[in-house]
Length: 398
Length: 146
Image (cartoon, rainbow over all chains, first blue to last red; front, side, top):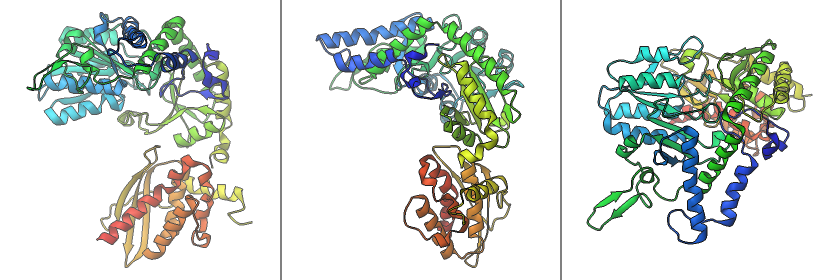
C-alpha cells in the first residue's frame, strides 16, 4: 500500500523495524525542505511574511494533532522532543509535586524504559511505590489484571497503549473508565499506538498521553505531550527561557505564559513540527482503520508462514498489532538480525528497551518484526524464504 | 592450508567455539576476580572471571548472552590465556587488539585468535570481537593496582 510514496523503498530492502522508527513519505520530507528553502524563520517573534507563514504552519499543527487524538482544545497539545521527554515532563513536572510517600503508581513489566525509569527515580526521591500489574499467560495486560492490582493507595496507572514487544493493544477505554471511577490518574504512552489504532483521549479518560512523531511517518526530534488543560495548568515546566514567559524584571519577578506555551521554552523543532503535521495529514488520507486492518491481515499471513518453519520460536502470535517477536532455535537474536541484513531485511534484535519483560518471557533477547502500512506479502515471502534458508546461518554471519 | 587461508576451517573453529565454548559457567570462589562486560551498541552481555596464582593465569571463565562472534572470541581467548604468565597474557591481548583494529601485530602469538583477522571488514562486529578483551584487561589492571 502506498509504497511509491516512500523514497527509502526504492532501495532493495524489506523494512520491518517500524516499531523503532518508520520510513518517511516524500510529502513529509518535501514539507520540511519547503520550510528550510522558502520560509525559514523563528516562530512567534517576527512580523515579516516568512515569520507569519511559519507561525501559521506551526500553530496549525496543534489543531491537526488535537483533531487526530480527539482532544478538547489545542491548549492541551504540547510539542516535545519525543515521548521520552513528554513522559519525563509528566512525572517530574506534575506528579513529583502532587504525589506523596506511600502513594502507588502501577506500571507493568512490558513497559519501555521511558515509562519505567522516571517513576523509579521518583520512587527514590519522594518515596512513592512503583508496582507492576501482572501480565497474563500470553504476556498481555488485561483490564481485569489492572483492576485487581489497584489498591486504596493507587494514585496513578501508567501504561503503554500498545506494548512495543508483545504488541498487545490494551483496552485503554475500559482501563480509563476504571481509573476515572476510582479517582486515579491515567497516563498513556501511545508511542506504538498512534497511527496504528484510533485514539480518543476524552472518551478514554486519559489524563496525560505521550507519543513520538518519528514512529508515525513524521520526523525525528518531535513528539507530543497531551494533558487535560487543568492538569497542564498546574504542571511545572522543566525548562525555562525565551518564548514561555509573560515577563521578568530585574527585581526577580516573573510570570509564565499559559499552557501549552509555558512548556515550549526556546526555539522549538519548527521544521519537525511542520513535518509532523504533514505526516498526520498523510495518515488521515489513508485512514487509521485501514492501516490497522492492513497490519492485522499481514501479521496473520506472516504468522501462518512462520509457523511452517521448524526452528522458529514465536512468542506473541495472538496479539492484535503488527508486532511479531521470535527467535531461531539456538541462535542468538543479534546473529539472526545480522543474517537477515545479508538479504537486506531490516529487523530489530535485543530486549527492545523493556528489560523487565525477561522475568515473564524467560528470555532476555528476541527478534522483532514490526509491520506497517507499506509492508507487503512480498516482503513477508522474502523474509520467510530467508528464514527457511537459515540452516546456513553461520556461513553468512561468520 | 593453515587457518589464515582456509575460510572453511576458520568458520568451523568459530562455530565450534560458539556452540561449545570453553569454560562457560562461573564459580563461587573469592580467589577469582570478576568483571561484567557489555556492548553499548548491541546486546552482548557477559560476566568473566579470572584467577591468577603466582603470576600465572590459572583459570578464566565466563557466562552470559552474546552473539556468535563475542561468545567464540571469549572461548578462544580463554584457551589462549590459561597457563600464560601475566606479561605473556598482556602481549597476547595487545596483539589481538592490534589485529582487530588493523594495526601491526605478531601472528605467531595469537594461535586460533587469528580467525578474527578480517573482522574489521564488518565494523559493527569489532566491538563483539573485543568484548572479552576489555573484561580481561580490566581484571589484569585491577590485579596490578592491588
